[in-house]
Image (cartoon, rainbow, N blue to C red):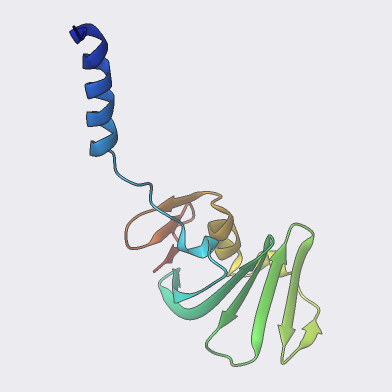
Length: 120
């Protein structure tokens, strides 16, 4: 005869697993994603490339501008020419942290950074 005391925990485990929801996925963890970045009330249409810890942000305007963030710092470029500048002070820096999941809340429709920036 099958012992009910042994089957009951198994049934409860199956019930819990079937009721669980999948974790929300950070879209910026993908290799390439397009969206709208909102910070300080301004909206920017951007493409975010995430490859091996280097996050490149390419805004729609001005055309040709990009900024690449890594652990070593940031490189700002315009039409492929690297420019001097403080990339870590860029208004796009929160996108780097969002891509790495730092100071970021993931919801079904957007990412929210601790500083109030949003990526949709």
